[in-house]
Length: 260
Image (cartoon, rainbow, N blue to C red; front, top):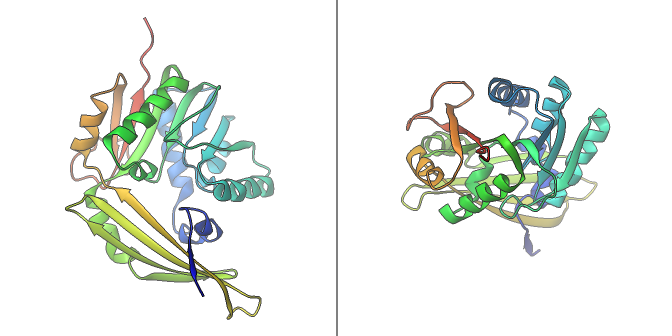
């Protein structure tokens, strides 16, 4: 049987929530909420980019009466997010948006993106394009919040991610993970099998190769210096503590300059 290579987060959408079941989304949403309340309390409109199946926005919508639009490039992921929102009766709007080419007529007080989605932007030019797209739809004084994974995180994560396997519903999967420090890329290669109702017979095989560019804090700050954003903060992991080169995950908080 031929394996079908699919766009990232297409076949994987079927098992994504299983892969992420150990992620503490309440903690993550609480951290984003803390940043918002610290630096831009009482926003009117919030946009999430690369939301996956919407877990963070769904939790965030429970904290305050935020007006949230959550978006992702993958239509399959957005479909799953809408199903979850309906089941939870959550007031979150879900749409498909490619954050590398943002097109929106709405402006926002807050834009955020988490779980190292920015690492899927493989070059300085890609990140600058994303930052410019956000700037066009941020209200004056609005905040852009995004995190990225560093080399330290890849070194820590690759051992427990590699050779991961499991089952979910009528799917089973196998993941190989490797970090190539010389080329500054982290690869996660997924093989998925869709099973018949007997739970044994394979009726489809899929593969997805996820390639992330791993940025150091120094590299990211160098990119940000080329923009007109004001750096509000750079936080390590999930604390309002200043990040440094040893941080595994860095969350950048940037303010859109107010026009004079």
